[in-house]
Image 1 (cartoon, rainbow, N blue to C red):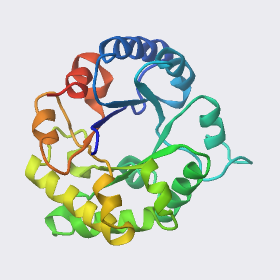
Image 2 (cartoon, helix red, strand yellow; image 1 turned 120 degrees about the vertical axis):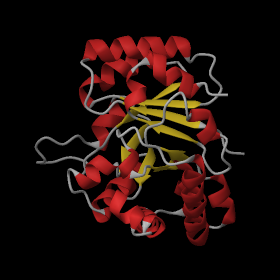
Image 3 (spheres, helix red, strand yellow; image 1 turned 180 degrees about the vertical axis):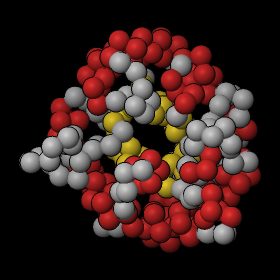
Image 4 (tube, one colour; image 1 turned 135 degrees about the vertical axis):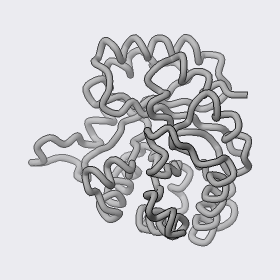
Length: 249
């Protein structure tokens, strides 16, 4: 039985004081929530937010990490440093990392395996550009990103991986895939995982939807058979919009 998993990606927003204010509000308002929750603030706010949600039902996530444990990598943040701050999960392969910062599948895969090696969980993001969808390549793009992103990942580690399907054309645009379109891709992702890891692993896999999730569409999306949660961007920046998504239904 899959449990809903709602994660908030704060991206490059909020000072420590602003992050603290939001973390306090979420800890108070989600304490009776029945789903799995996570927030991923910026690196500079991880310690602040982590202290405020410690002992609550909200997990601490990081938005990225370096592909190496340590060394001469100016400007990078190590999985060891994230673990030291109490980070539970690392978001990897987000479309902004892929398309703005040009991270390829091989680099993302290296990060996935490194994070798993150190006992943390991963949210692996996959999704197509608008031109890829219009060319009817959405399934092929997602399959490639999953197969390459999970290369060398053992079946035993799959329980620590969540996949987030985020159609790139819907992120921050106000456009959302219809619940039916989103569910169809989620179902395809499950088939890809089944081919590699078996039916049981595919049935247990949590697949989030990410792409302009809002309080107004959350329940419709979550009602679909293969959608198991949401990776929320803009609506995660205010308790007034994140809480209704997190407590949908």
